[in-house]
Image (cartoon, rainbow, N blue to C red; front, side):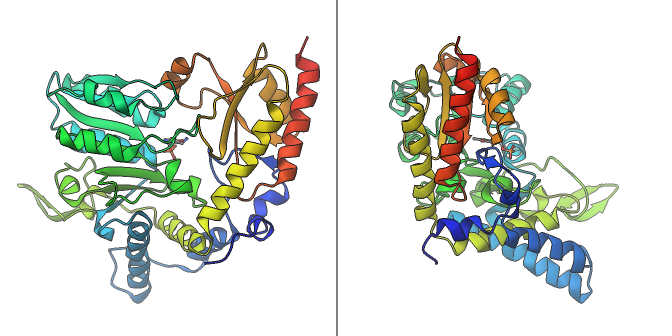
Length: 401
Ligand code: PMP
């Protein structure tokens, strides 16, 4: 593994040549040349499908495709590549758990505990399955530190609690709840825990065995990989207990007019021709990342967010929603609407995001109807921070009456 070198890291991202100041990596990360090359090579050179044809190229492709599961298993310290199910992304993975695991098991009056900090992807699927089964969604509120209040979990859990939905890292506050404590409490009550790793996997992929995580999801596109591919990790016995929601090719062993028999997991949860290019691209992203000291890269991005926060804090009316040292900084200026500010900043060439960040319950708990958000990646620089702060100053001159 190489020591993290910011300039060398940055040089691998062709999009930075004309992306202006890109501060929206929590929405989606830019792609390094290694991922672009692997994807392009797949489309230019590969012939064949996976798990279907007997000719040599199709067989080789199948081997690469299956080896990618092992690479993801290695990233998460999962016991086996067979515990990795390909999905379109985090959203699909969580919906799959809600529909294929929870729905057949939930009874009217059962409880799904969802933290107030969740992204809609770890919220709406639970509201939907509650509607379908008569189960209830129960709030795990934020504590005074604006993190999900794990200390209150023991009081919230009842004999009817079945599932806990908790994010590893908030896409708004950057807050990371104490997963170890939360999972221990939930397991003590016989609950199953869904961890949304969409943000967390980018910075510190979870060790699913050490944390004893039941289900974990992440999306490749936030981890320098392609769009349209993501991962559901599940403990083997839980994946085996899931009823497939898609039927079709490759998920069966036998089909007749009398019925069908399914393949073992993960294949029976992956009907149809998969996103092979996506899997190859994700695998290339992980291989590429293995060459980087992630801890050093992470501390670089966090340092930039802190620099931005410290500089912006000197401007009047600034409020930060950052709850701990992270590469995210959500903020507002008193009396200035985030939409007005983001429009001006975008005009000055700063790519950032403003609004509700797909986390309306969290924003309600924070008492705001929206925020600006910048998110730093290891390819960002101190001059990006300077550009942001200068642009904010220009916008403040226009917006402050
Ligand atoms: N959870 C969190 C915390 C996220 O930040 C996101 C992406 N914004 C998602 C879930 C959903 O990920 P995707 O849209 O890739 O499915």
